[in-house]
Every structure is written in C-alpha cells, then in structure tokens.
Image (cartoon, rainbow, N blue to C red; front, side, top):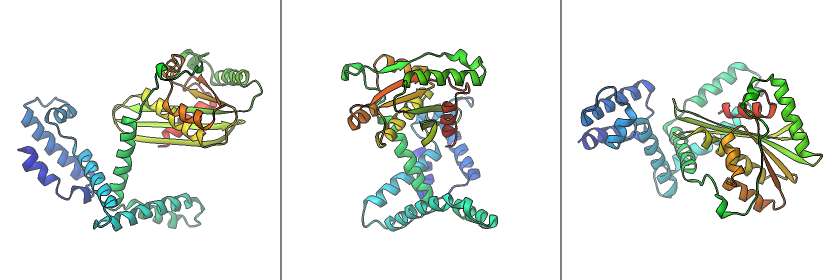
Length: 316
C-alpha cells in the first residue's frame, strides 16, 4: 500500500524536480516514519535496515535512478521529446568546464564571481546527467573484476615491502630519504617512472575516493582522481587507484620500468601471492616488454610522492 499510494505521489515528476535540501529532508522523514510503521521496528532501528526490510531505496537514491533512467531513455530514442534538451545540456556542461578552467585569467573579480554564480544555477537536466555519470561509475566499480587469481596467469610479479607502519614514528625527512634511497637502489640507473596511488572510504558518508600521481625524473607529469557514493572498503579503492593509474600509463610512451608505490599493505601482500589487477594485463598487452615493480610506501609519513597522491585523492 505504501508503494502504490505514497511512492506513486513521490515519483510524480521526480526526475525533473530540483528538490531543496529542506524539502528532501521532509520527504525522507516521511518515508522513514512510514517504514517504521510497516515493519513495526523501534525508533532506534537504523534507516538503512528499514529500507532493506521493506525493499525500497532512500528518496535521493530513488531520484538519481529516475533521473538516470530518463536521461538514458531520452538519449537512446531519436524521437524522444527531451533528446534535444538533454543533448544541449550535455554540450553546455562541457562548455562550462572550459569556462571554469579560464577563470583565473579573468581580469574582473566581480565578473569571475558572477560567472561562478551562473554555473551553480543548474537545471534539472544538469542534475540528471550528473546522476547518470555517478551511477555509471558505481556500476563499473561494482561489476569490474577486482583481482586475477594465480591460476589464470603465469606472471611472477615483483613486490617489495621494506617498510612497516612504524615509519610513521620517524621524522618525515628520514622516511622520505629512506624511501628515496630504496627507489635509487631499485632503478639502478635505468629509465623509469614512478606512480603513487591512494584510496579511501568514509563509512559515515559512504563516499569513496581514489587518486594517483605519475612522476618522471622527480617531476609530476600526470595525475588523476575520482569519487563515488557507494558503500565499499578502503582496500577496494586502493585497488581502484592502481587500476586507473595503470590505464593512464598504458596510453603513455613509457620507459621499460614502472614503479608503483602503494600505501596499502593488503594490496602488496595480494600481489606477492601472485594476484594481479586486471588492468595490469591490458598494460602488458600494450607494452609487452615493460617491467612493473610494486613497492610499499608508508602512508602519511612524509614521503613526497605519497603525499602528492593523497592530495589528488582529497581534491575530489
């Protein structure tokens, strides 16, 4: 009865409405009260438990799904009435990104502030496209294979773990010097690049982030980062950072040796057990003679490359 009488009203024009935080909070409280009545659970029951028992998502998740469904349907059907509107909004979003990139060069600070205010006034189509991109990222994160087990390949990866978490008690300069010496010993005069990765998960907000930074001769040459709203783990996002940096390296003109510095002991131990991320095989197919060396870097201990990778992660 709740789904047929209440949610049918909530769903009306849901993809095309920009709901304020105040109104969204009222609708959420209404649904939570209804779920409590349906299940008969005490008021202390967590909301996500009530949603699981009844089989309904939160209202904001419901809106994102409706927006993504409307957007995909409009772009897929050539005669859909909203196809032109959403296509124009997609073009406008790309133009807005180019405009924001040139903001520091504007002479007038008032003009800069006015342009930012205009960009923040997003129509429902902009929110719908953002929801679609977010759900695509979550789908990829949830369905892409995490590890390739040893039985499916004959590779012998090189993983080096010379540090432990006691390095966090060292002076930052001492840890950075020791790690730099380790890299010098590994490289031994050969041409190489260094890739630093990092990932995180905040269980309070269900927000996950990943980031990486690529260095050549001590200079930052490429960086990347991403974020999603999904419940997973920090280790999964550490792996996501590794996968994305390997994809970035695959499209580069790379030297014969790549050093991947990860601050997750779990990731390095898995690689020592001959489990490999799927993106590694795409890199090997593109560069058959490449050599990848995996190195554990103590996180939050003052190692320069790791700190820059962490900055990329928190930029999302």
